[in-house]
View 1: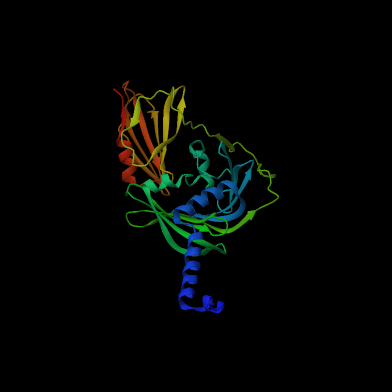
View 2: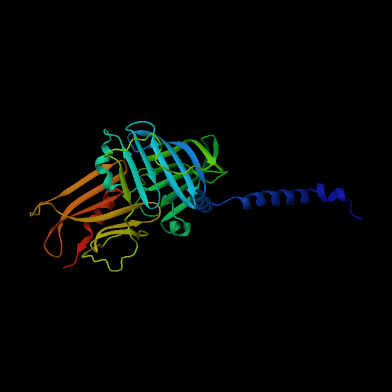
Length: 331
């Protein structure tokens, strides 16, 4: 009879055990794409409180950021800890902001629509993989947590790329960088410096007591629709970067005034509005707010009326202008 001790000490058996152990451990690890999928699910289900730093390319703002999942729906409260006093409450249905009198952003309130972290990434990673290469990056320690690094780089140079780090234990996003694919220049960055996952005692998300309401308080209902049935439009963009799909529209009196497109990571909107006054003046304007490009130009619609075409998105300037120049009116 073979000695039982042999079965565990023979070099061949020993090597086999090591191979099984190594590949067994690796088999339990997530691929980069699976980590992105897990992150989306975590931000849809977990409640947490923390502090994050956001760099817009010029200034750094520290933000107290809280997400509470109530009845299966994420609700967000965000309050900058430096700069103008401002408090933001966000759900999928509405955005409520309380501004201070010295807040320059109050003049732009009607154009705000930003998303919470729970909606930064698409639920379908397969769709994301159509336009981006998803690969590993070196792990890091962020907010005293072990984080997995993931690179999400576009297959075409008509949009920006991302580097993200995900908490190994909860799959929550801990750091995200947006970078220019032409020169790898960092465009924006957010990172948590503190984060605490909540398991019990989740508070109702209401306007905080003591927050002064004023004439600068705004409540913006998400009026974007996804169904274009019955909506009239005499214009359409003839150039849409590959992988971008219609994600929402806004209409007024049954007439299309704005379309939004997304590839899951980057997005842009196209808006048509009448040119003030009766004369068709020549307009070619470009503004840059952090990584966001705003391009406006004048055009004549199918009825001979002067219009302004505005394209807004976190995309390279050349891509924004190509989209703008591709908007055509039916004749």
